[in-house]
Image (cartoon, rainbow, N blue to C red; front, side):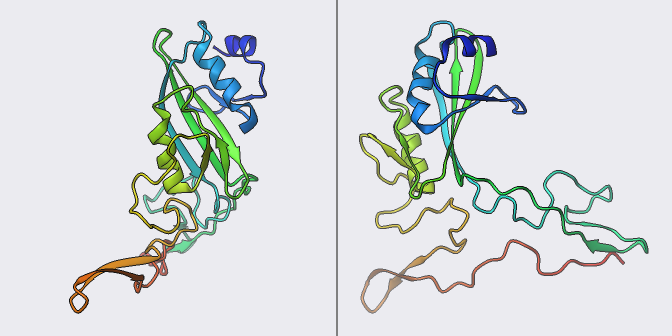
Length: 217
C-alpha cells in the first residue's frame, strides 16, 4: 500500500510509521487533492468514508500523570512504593507540547482491497478552518457538523454547518480541553415566571487531579 500511495499521490504528505494502521499526515491545503486520489484512483479505491473526528492537544505535555507506564503494585499511575514500603506520589516527566492544537482525523475504507487508512490534518489557527469533504463524500456532512459543534472547527463550503448535538444558543464547544466540566450555563424551571430560564452555572468546578494521595498502611 505504501508503494501505491507513493506512486499516485503527488500532493504534500508524510507517513506516520508508528500508528496501528497506515496513517497519512498532510497539510490542510493538500487535503482535497490527497482525498480525491485515495477515493478515485482505482488501485487505491478508498471509496468509503467511515469516520471523521477531532482531537484537542491543548493540555498535552502538561499532565501530572504518566501515560506510558503503570506501577507493578497495581496502583494507579502517578504513585509508586517508597523505600520504606509506603506509597508516594510520583511526578512524571512531561511530554513535548504539541505545536498545533487541533487535529482532524479521517478514516477511509477500501472495500475492494480490504484496506483501511487514516488521514490526519493538524490545525493551529483560531478558529481552526479546513475544507469540507462533502463534495467528495456526502456522508461527511454530519461528521463535520459534530466536529464543529464539539470542537469549534469550521469546515469551508459545508452546505449546512450548524450544531448537531448541543442545544440552540449553546455557548462554547464542550470537547475542547479548556471548556469547564460543569459548563457555562444551567437551565431550570422558574415557578414564579412559569418558564424555563438559563442562568450562569452555580456548581463548583470539578478537579480531575486527586487532591489527596493516601499512603499504604
